[in-house]
Image (cartoon, rainbow, N blue to C red; front, side, top):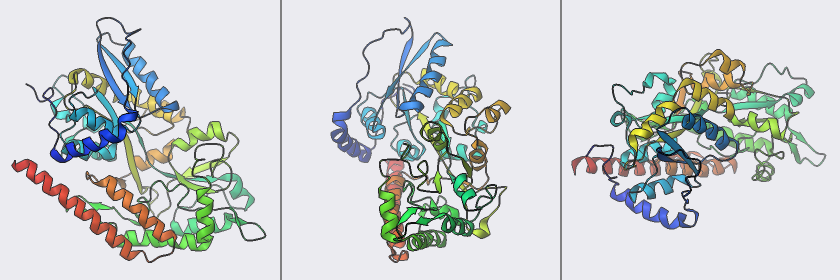
Length: 454
């Protein structure tokens, strides 16, 4: 039996996790459509689980329709799935996985170590290759784990600094000179912050918890890496991490700890709606992804804004090589799926330049590929796509730590952010989180070794 068709061999720890996930997600378990209406006779039907809904899902459906109608052997049937990661693991462990599954880049180590996905060297053939050199270097690193490529990319993103141009103009600030350093950002944020006669915040220039979706991001702007892959070591408590969280503490102190926290909480359910803090004018500057421009077109069509690379610690400034973090939505072939060879055909189709550019254009994102067409940039609906593209292709672009315990590690950084915002001493908190993350990494390393020797 070939390596691409043998049943899944899920590790014991993964199996225990699968049992818990199954209980937690039973009520939301996907129902595969039973109807084959409109599917031409004789096609091999592949079930593709994907997390996207809304405009992102519709854009992908157009790509799938294109694939389905430009060849006559395979039919991709996309099934939207909520809470996709545990459900995929349950299906793989149970021996009934989909043929394709759309996950997040940080899932790659977990699925690779659990033997839950098929690496691409087992799928590619001399006549049907996929050249990893097509990707921007950061994307290639992100898709590769322990020297093997495990996933294809569906879309990628970095984070940028969005600025309200009307607010800058009202304050007499040159809108063409957006902040490039942390000190410039702080100075501008103070100028743009407004209060009422009672001293209450009516507009915030900038605060790191609008939104508080990536508390682990800030050390990167101070030269941090979060993780050293060579030594398999968490590095949150390194000087860069300490500097970043002390900066967060200073921001909260300037704005008022409780006032700024209360302001942030009022927007918990408003992001990407007309009530978004940036769209409604309550925040002059925010760190967000390229998708924000897409939402702005429908939710705040009259908003005048610009976007630049995130400001960095002053000594690190190099406009020709921006610092940033790159993440991606990915496509994997589950171990034990029914049609791995056909799934590989769709993978290769999805990595074509024209396909990637069509999807990235619809999502308002940059391309994950080294090469882009002139038309892609000139006709892109996001006027700042080149800002994000420069981060993705920067030699200083970082990816999330490639460790199967990253999600737990990331969750811990929320505690560090809260402690910093409350003005509490942050160094012992960072050291404790780093120690706990390191323990998880050590256990993961022991299990890897046990699997190799068993």
